[in-house]
Figure (cartoon, one colour):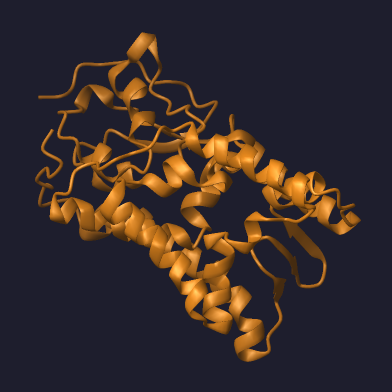
Amino acid sequence: MSGAATVPAGRSLWLRQRFLVLRRLSQLAVLGLFLLGPWAGMWIVKGNLASSLTLGVLPLTDPFVLAQSLAAGHRPAAAAVLGVLIVLAFYGLVAGRAYCAWVCPVNIATDTAAWLRRRLRLGNGRVPPRALRHAVLVAVLLACALTGQVVWEAVNPVTLTQRAFIFGGGLAWTAVAAVFAYDLLVAQRGWCGHVCPMGAAYALIGSKPLLRVQAARRQACDDCGDCYAVCPEPHVLVAPLKAKAGAGPLVASRDCTLCARCLDVCHADVFTLTHRFHPAPKDREAAP
């Protein structure tokens, strides 16, 4: 696998970067809505990514935060419960683990670290077991139960990133820098794919969402490896691309973040963004 296939001249720069650009715009727009209040006095959204209120009527609450609160023995407000139900409905039924790729601001740091690793040819590094993030999730909930506190929010890089933009402070930026350094110097895609308990929570929530990526033209794949190089969870591509154990072309793994970078970089246009109930195309021989 070369990881650096030549892109045909007819494939524009926009087609090679469109989903990356759209994701960055989405992440910055979400962050910008939260910053409008403290920066410009326009309180469209109040709160943070853990718990917010939009336009005074729409509550949104992170399910992992509510789980910590319940484990700590706190009685949640009705608005918090409603906010969690809305989030669960959206990510559970529609978008799966898309929060990690389209909303989370830390994703910008981890994507940058992954890009630098490829440029510097640093290899995979010391990647921990994938089950570690589930162990961290359980450990956080146990810590909440023992301390009576929502402990993860004190060190959560997502919360600290937002706090750093609003209030500044070395500690908040240090947490983001630590995640970046870990992914760059220790383990490729280590934080999001192997450590972050929020990623584990959203993977559990969105096990069978509507939106999916499909390797619709997998017979056209020439094993260049470009999709594996940019995918934050490359193991999700193996079965649909290679028909492992008779798997269909749908990327059905709950670990998929719907980042759609595979669509951006694939010069053979193997992938498409579709829905779970889209009929699987019949495998055909690749066109010469």
